[in-house]
Length: 325
Ligand code: NAI
Ligand code: MG
Image 1: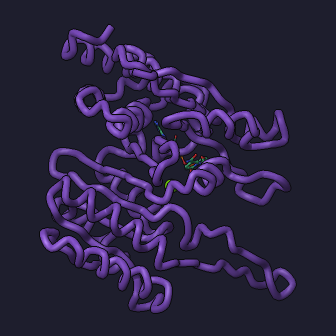
Image 2: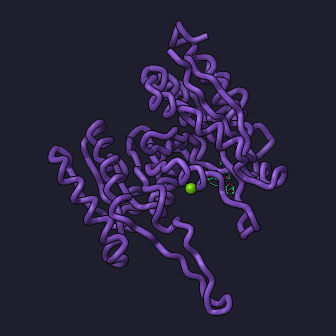
Image 3: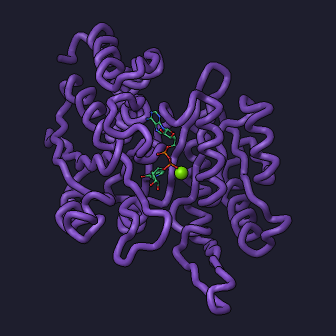
């Protein structure tokens, strides 16, 4: 069997710490994985003038999956800087952002549309700087494929789909998303399908998170609700995500960013990166290894040190699986 080539992009800040930890865990599993290291992010931009160097993109194109840490984005516009994660999502058409959240009584999956909505990069200044406008682009095509992905995932889970939108106010954009999502969901008669307005969804996530199975929603809403869900289940330190599309390599990354406040101290929680690596294993077809890594990471508390937490997770894995080394 040909090995799977994984492009590893630690990025900036704690990405440089948690991604090597995740690779360490993967290396104990004795799977046919080959890792190639690549750079991207603000550091890469400062060094090379390009946040996503051509060599990195080329490596990604030749790989089965991308394991991505986090990059630091400047708050204001810097000439020539483009967020590499947004570029990668667009380049590989990674239209579905899967963000699971689980704890004792919560087991939900947010399926976030990843290519359009308010993140369509259509922003402009008008009125001599006194007005800023963002265009929210919603297409039938993107709505249909994200709805279909969510329905397929719901079939494999508890069979419940919640369509989250704000069509009462955003009548055209959310209206289109809502209509298409219901049309697609109608092709799945065994699913229990409901709709919830996004503000109500935020409240229900806090009050009664166990009522949710799969949530499908547009880009910005999914971004915010998934951080909320992460907060409910132990925080960004254990929130993983996948960006998947069609035939291209998929990209796996912790939900958190570069955490400049704790970068370089060795104290970040590596579990979000390790759980993201587990999602990657599952996507590559190593379901058993994925389940083992997920279990080991979830059963391990963060010791306040990347090195110690990673070591404890690896010890758990070795106890459980005699084939790992
Ligand atoms: P952040 O996720 O980096 O940090 C938020 C808070 O959570 C900080 O207090 C941080 O110390 C803590 N935190 C995050 N991950 C942690 C971990 N693994 N263990 C322990 N504590 C952790 O978000 P923030 O501060 O809003 O953004 C910082 C930078 O990261 C910005 O430049 C932002 O643009 C970038 N960012 C990048 C993302 C990506 O690459 N996909 C996603 C989110 C933010
Ligand atoms: Mg986010």
